[in-house]
Amino acid sequence: MGKVLIIGAGGVSNVVVHKCCQNPDVFSEICLASRTLAKCEAIKNSLPPAKTIVRTAQVDADNVAELTALINDFQPVMVINVALPYQDLSIMEACLATGVHYLDTANYEPPDVPKFEYKWQWAYHDRFVRAGIMALLGSGFDPGVTSVFCAHALKHHFDSIETIDILDANAGDHGYPFATNFNPEINIREITAKGSYYEDGQWIETEPLAVKRTYDFPEIGVKDIYLLHHEELESLALNIPGVRRIRFWMTFSEKYLTHLRVLENVGMTSIEPILFEGRPIVPLHFLKAVLPDPASLGPRTKGKTNIGCIFRGIKDGRPKTYYVYNVCDHEAAYAEVGSQAISYTTGVPAMIGAMLMMKGIWMKPGVHNIETFDPDPFMDALNRHGLPWQESFAPVLLD
View 1 (cartoon, rainbow, N blue to C red):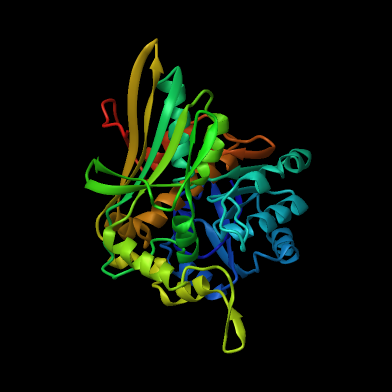
View 2: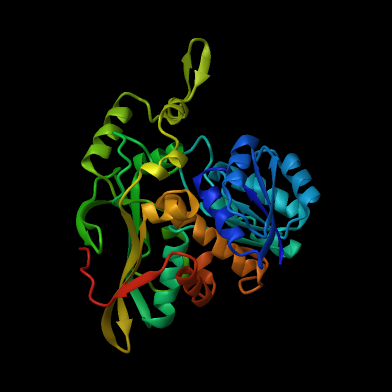
């Protein structure tokens, strides 16, 4: 059906490329581009035989001129951005310069400020409308699938939603004393930032990891969960009418948090440059370099993830609860595409969002969050492409 340019060559990109190649009727040709060409070549060489044509290219995703030249050369229908969130705006600028559609999995974050916000990307809306092109923001799992779960719940199960709790649990074990399941820099910046949640029209801030609960997850059991700030809260607060409270929770083991506290206490999680042997270095950049590459965790990781949303609201004048979630097996994901479940649960929704755009099912000019579209085709595609969802109408609620 058309060409796509995929920018980024980490674990998520590996999944996106594999899943696009499983759908050659939609993705006829792929150009996989990254700052490091060897990483692109490694992904290309790992692919099973497929009808989709895959080529590779080197590009600096911070350089709008380089991106624009590559897009003009390859002439894709759209760009799938699975690079770093610092690079969202430069890639969006290149899409505007060339008139191609855009999709990402995480919202923009300035390199020098650990703050995820949509305001920088939302500011592009009018320019994308005038250019007649679309940007789909946050087509990963959270944000992404969890946001679609919210639209699905509102459409099919509630007249009004009062509370949403998003729960992200990873019961995988990779055998390392300490490692992050996605980009260490992004992961650690997210965890060590202050938490926040939305309630009664206000944002309430908490100290990092200060709010803790336990939850008994289907298929993976009882886990400690901690309240974090997460980007989909911001868009859901605008796009789910009348919602009173939205919170995001993520699981962490005590071993993981002990390592993180030590690293934080000695300054290794700082993003402020320090002088070392006459050169400025960012401690978190150095830590990222010495930690295991998340893309290498696939063959080592066993166990499952469980990510979903618990809703409380009103249907036909009566209170109702609803829980929709996905369970993904790390080993099954690796057997299929060579990446663990964290990458798989992000990469599959990126492919699905791109597929719906390529087919014209989801298509309107401007910059849009994923929950603003009809959830039904996305929910159907999850079941068909490796992330089947389950539901419960009597979940245990969080206080």
